[in-house]
Length: 251
Image (tube, rainbow, N blue to C red):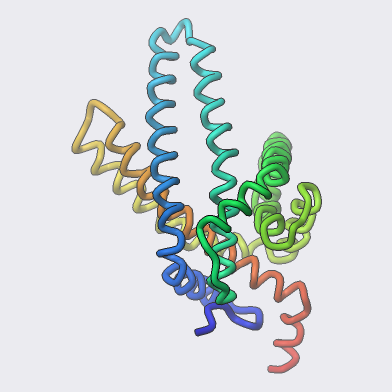
């Protein structure tokens, strides 16, 4: 069964393809969801402990603990690039009907880690710089550079080239790409809000339950958005390759 279209699709069809591909990939992504769940829960609980201790005396915040908390976020985020690369690799293989193994996925993640780490750092610098320039440029770059990891994983692009290729791919289809991510994003945000409200009712003294519940949910929504990104990446490539023009001329 073909999971992705062979010509540029509407936003609805891209999202429909994303759902079908996610279902097809679910078992192969389950191990990554477990790793993400453990990582998110551990990072959130560790940072909560560090930040609570750092702000125990508001007038004299513990800068060491504040630095440690942000360092934990940075280090874990970089290490999780290995997982994200491995997920993209397995998603692509399912879409292409190619057999692989979990070991192959992690080996590729390790091989692609350094260029991905450099691209991630450059991505954050570009995003923060854009935000300092009246915010809107930051939002534009946040989305237009978002596909760098797909270029590194699937096209073996270098750190700078991946960011450049991502920007060129999205340019001209920025609003379409935003809508593809925004539609499921709004739904997920509503669910997070409901979970937060329920968690607050259950335990008004601690945010531990909220951290655990939202971390577990993120462990499954993250792979889903990686699949959405893959489907949109595929659609944008069809558009840039001229398939968009061919499809219109054929109508």
